[in-house]
Length: 227
Image 1 (cartoon, rainbow, N blue to C red):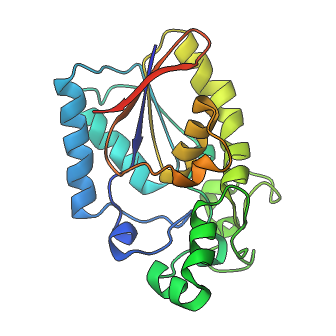
Image 2: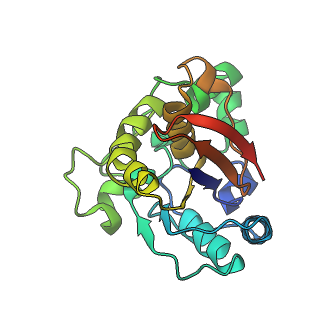
């Protein structure tokens, strides 16, 4: 059984080196090109999908659409869920990463970005950019909508969707594409690969490159490679 992950192409805020999180930004020109190249590569290598899962953020949805279009599979059903959103960076969202490092120190910013269980400074619920004010999440209980997340919390958010939707789809024989974000994919990778809390800090998933997992009947990883 195969599973394909793809992190969205470069976003406009990736290009500006800003913390993005749940803020909804568009793909950059480079990001659009990365998504198109990924779709062409998947077509060239013969990858076909029966279902695609993505987040409710524009950059992931757009990447999913482009990948499917370029591989002649735009008809494939898509399921969008907030559970595959990027990690919520709290008050850091919209800040320049370099300037934040100058203010708080490289080590602190590295911990905020990569550690498993350290929370960023939380965003006020009344902030104009709070997810509590976004109609995408109006159906969720207020205490479920995050104000800031670490990777541990992100995994706790993503895991129910893996268990309820993605894993059953794979086990039923469907060929699955997951188009999401650096940290939601890192969380899933941690779970399916059994990566330790310490080692997950070193895992980076590049934008716009299809990551293929070959899995056994227990969804254990047999092989992992980028196209």
